[in-house]
Structures are given as C-alpha cells and as structure tokens.
Image (tube, rainbow, N blue to C red; front, side, top):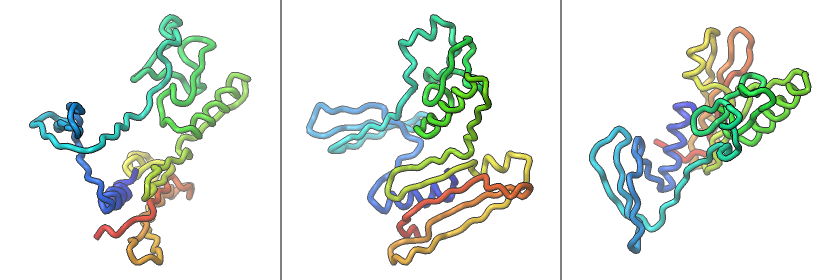
Amino acid sequence: MEGEVRKYFQCSLEKKGLNFKLKTKVFSVDTSGDVAKLTLEPSAGGEHTTFEEDVVLVSAGHVPFTEGLGLDKLGVEMGKVGRILVNERFASNVPGVYAIGDDIPGPMLAHKEEEDGVACVEFIAAKHGHVDYDLVPGVVYTHSEVASVGKIKEQVKSLSFKHWCKDERYRPKVKDRDGYPCFILVSKGTAQAVKYSISFPVSRCN
C-alpha cells in the first residue's frame, strides 16, 4: 500500500475511534474476570504495558492447508509456514505434484488462486499458461475502503525503467470529506500503468 494512502487510511479509521498501537505485540490475555486484561510489549522488546477491554477480537489471518497431506513422505520441498515451493509452471520438486493459490508463496486472494488454477492446468496440458501478478487487485474491506493494483512506488524505484507518478485528489461534494488520495504510476518507455491505488471515502485528516 502506498505510504500516502496508508496515512490517509489510518487517519480515516482514527476519526472513527480506532486507536493504533504500531510495532506492538500482545504478550498475554487474561479473561478470568469480567473484562479482558491485555499485556502488551514492543515488538523489539521492552517494558510491558497493560489495559482492559470488554471485548477482544483476534484477527490471525489464515495459513496454507498442507499439514497432514503426506507431502513430507513424498519429499515435496516446503517453504515458510507450510507453503509448497513451485517453479513458474506451478510444479513442485516432485514430478506430478503441482500447487496453486494459498498453498504457494504469494498473496492469499481468491481471484489470484483462480488464475493460478487456470494457468497450472494449461501447463499440465502442455499449453502456455501465464499469470501477471502485477494485475491482481487487492482491497481492504473497511470503511474507508482501500483498493490497489500493481507495484508500490518503492518497488518501482528499484526497477530499471523510468516512471512518471501522478498524485491526484478526487474532490467529493461532501462537506465532511477530504479528497480521495489516488496515485497512478506509468512507465515512460511503454506508457503502461504499473500502479493504481485509491482510497475512499476519507474523512478530513487536517
């Protein structure tokens, strides 16, 4: 996510009452009483702090479902958190074993998995398969929403081609709304858009 969009996104959520504690991890949670008591510590280590809340929501994400499939017995090479390592044709190091979607490195998105599956079957059928991961969109389903596709500016700066960045603000006709931050990065050589990011609607963050 673009740094500027990230700033507006966080500001918008703070306006709704969310309090962010960044670079912090939960050390423990005590639910033995009427309220939940949380103990926090800095991610880099340091002094513990505690506070109480009525409800604690745990968002742990999801992990590949590869445990217990017998992949270790087949000798399939595995990566971090149980992901199967594959080549550009979605083939593992064991002949006849292919993997796609959440079970391989990359974003865990349903529409990405669908494209993986199509390309993988095309490769198995001795045809040409291709997935351009720079064209896989991502959305944060909150209010405000944030949507983006392509590389972020930091990634584009590391590439060899020259690029041009357009920083825009869509101005909605709503008094309590600021401009929607929008970024478009374009390759100067091919005129191909390599990034499009937008966040909306955004409360005023002045």
